Image (cartoon, rainbow, N blue to C red; front, side):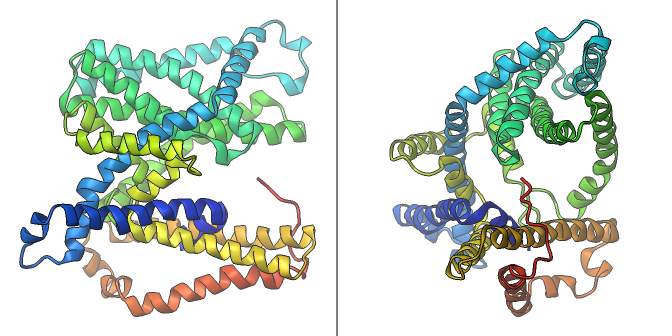
Length: 436
């Protein structure tokens, strides 16, 4: 249900491009790899089928190729946003240089947190991060370098993310590109300093995680501050509230994440984490020396080919190749529902208000699918925690993997998402104001 909702929210174009990557990976590259290497079929075990072989080829050959494509696509995305990135950095430095003076001379709606206190807080928080990096890498020099990189890139990338989200919208936050850039820089420096192996991998993933969170939180905060500014709020009060929210979320989220990993295992088919998997592959490949470089290089050239033919989004195509096929297919179905809804509204000559009303209801339903699945996953994880899944919930594995039950439930979800917005379009029960 969550992926169905995601497909509806992102729309038919994005979901189609994503699905094209899945089609390319599963329907072209996997059969091509098996055809070009007949020995793969000869090495099949008695208990293995061709489907198992296809999954092995996808995991060991297509995914590394997708990693190479995503690396180039991430930098290409940043290059396409270069004017906005430069503008964001320039504005950050400009705002920084204008701060200071007497707060009494500044309007209430323009007063931010005191910069001296902000700097002191950054230094204080950098100390435990330095200790954490040293624990991971067992290298004082490497930890110091990572801490400095964290402060510099955290400042720059948070400014960029906040600027883009504030100006355009949350969907334009280039978190993947910023995180991969950080990971590459940190990984190359760690190798240069001689910090390799799993210790180096852990340290590189730690700083990439910090920058990823910084970019995401900066975008979220900018949306909140933008709304607060429109409503006449006081910035420094909102900033304190944001800090409290981040601290509370960090303390609370650790437990459900640990429970989810314990029960479902993050990165498995039940709980895929494509961005985290990509980060792990890159860190292991560069720092740990485990990268399938020939396939990655092929993926790099493939990305250049996509750019040259002006493909809609090389990053989305690469992500589609990297994700399990069923995930991209579900997103594609959600996108098709959105396309069907838009076409039906055109046929009925719906007004702008009616279209917005229908789209708002569809977005609410989709958000409910996403939030509902996430909440149920956490609830089940805590229920099952410390016990065997079959023992804790008898019959659940059979029900969850039953094709016929899915065949009944999924069409019902599609019906809700397709017909309810259309049905409510003319009733006027929902506000017509579109919220980004």
